[in-house]
Length: 334
Image (cartoon, rainbow, N blue to C red; front, side, top):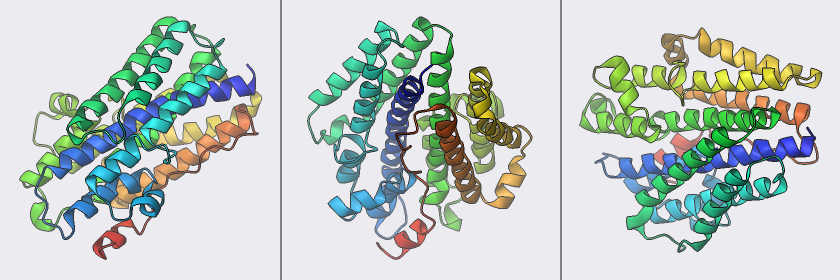
């Protein structure tokens, strides 16, 4: 397969998955905004969470200033000036798909093209009462695209690059969504174990479609360590880091090629750490520190995949690592 074709398939899948996960991150923020928080400057404090987690804070501040619910939602959902918005993710996915029409099925093209055309018709900004409906729609279109892909495309190297892009992006975003709770919504000591703390963890589980899975596996109260274990170490949870790295490593092995040895080594190293990891070790290191370190490794893996298999003329978008000073900025009233 040509490197240019592989690149378009890889990024088509990543942009579709990124649009879905941006919708999930915004959904967490919207659900959390309905809960009482004992914080100074509550709205700005809360709405910096999705901005910091997706690496959009500096671009947002330059255009809008202080974080507000309506402005953050528009910037991350439908603002054409934000390269990581849902709007631009779907636009770029459509452009990638258009470039490889011969490598995907007509059903895949119809789904992705129809999704983009419908997004273009939406009012800008979207009325606040339609936010939840829009997030659900984005998730449903992503599910539809994956279902059509698996149901119509040949089980060949094209599908392997699609799955590689999907699961690498999903691992990245699951880590970011999980870090919402500790990165910005870190409760006071009195809140831990309380009603607000419970509903924040519940909303996080629902945002990654893991609430029912949690109840089935643990059959007990929601606790931080169990949520983290489910979304990091469980290989039977579809959006967990472990499950995603299972698929990434499998795709790289199936793609094969001598030029991909380092990418396979990095993926195997990450997968082994998750396969043999213990949640006690994760919390001993610090959940935020663990997740930031994981994001650094996935960024390195993405760059190695680019150098090994994809067209080197294009540069992979910069890592969306979470700034270490975000919490201090919030406490200083920025």
